Length: 165
Image 1: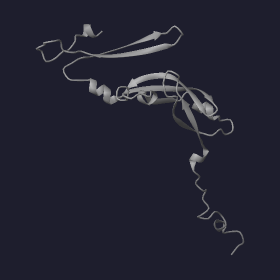
Image 2: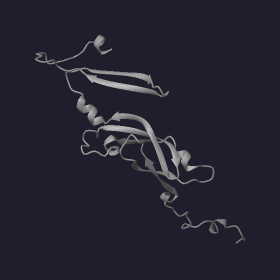
Image 3: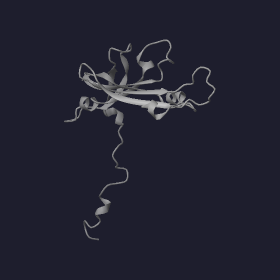
Image 4: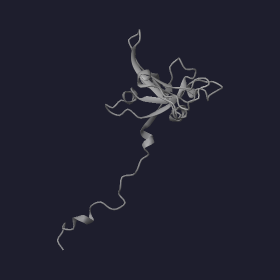
């Protein structure tokens, strides 16, 4: 047998795989600080990969959208009253391990919207862009439903297209 011909025996063996490391060892937890309009300041925590080389962790956090219930942000006794409102908050600034949030939008939960919609009535939806005095542009959405009048005999209460515009 010639020397150095059987090269496959000296190469890698079956058990020499790379060891699996826990991905959470490379992560850091950042505290979320809500705006001052809400009664609860500490509203949660978020996870990000640690700073490594030119990739800075705080840059990856800026611009993230956090969606929370209004009942979680306001400490009130009757949470059912505000539980269906979803508040969107955007991470604006990172100070140490604290993320400062700013208001980004509001929405309603799907089950609340579905409970408002009924048969034999019309839905009227509208939207408008509004510029505030401090320069922000706010897009407002409105939803309305037709309702029966007092002592109405007719089962339905639809509106015409001219009324819904």
